[in-house]
Image (cartoon, rainbow, N blue to C red; front, side, top):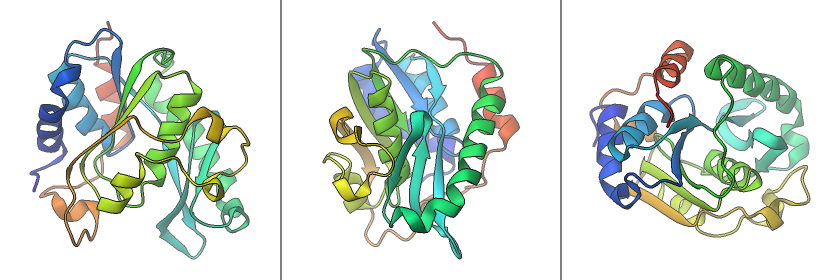
Amino acid sequence: MFRDRVDAGRQLAALLGQYRDAPDALVLALPRGGVPVGAEVARALNLPLDIMVVRKLGLPGHEEYAAGAIAAGGVRVTGEPWADLAPVFEREQRELARRERAYRGGRAPCELAGKTVILVDDGLATGLSMRAAIIAARSLGAAKVVAAVPVGEAMACQALAQPAKASEFAGRSDLERIGSRADEVVCMHMPDPFHAVGAWYGVFDPPSDDEVRDTLASWSRP
């Protein structure tokens, strides 16, 4: 379906043309896989590029299964009882903080208050990472949130347009008030059966920390 993440980003940008040159819009890519996709979207739309660092929480003993996610500002979203994920939370919280420092290189995050924020990842399986990113963007004052991916599982993509269930919140009582739904969900392809995000890419090697850092460092912010 896509040669690689660059190809996916170029195709995805074609569906987001209404935001080209928008003075109040910016692209936030979810590292690491979302960064090359988001960079192509931002380049095509002539928008600023930044990151929204999100970490998946793997279920202990089944780490490949995304059972929850965390994002900036203490945002925690879970599809499992929080007590089952608590053992991995501290480790992933440290990794989230490390990535924030490593990728930004001392640069301050873009201001989100009053902005249209286009959240971009390379794909959507459970949707928990994107849900955490949506909530984090809302908590930082985003006026409009667009969730955009090249490929995703149909039910997960559709669910992002609806508020999260109270059972999915963990550790924060104000998440529902902040808002946990996207104003717009752009998913190019929702294959059935879905299998996995990587199945729809010819090349799906994960970007390195250096590649993410270099992409952000070379980006000229307006």
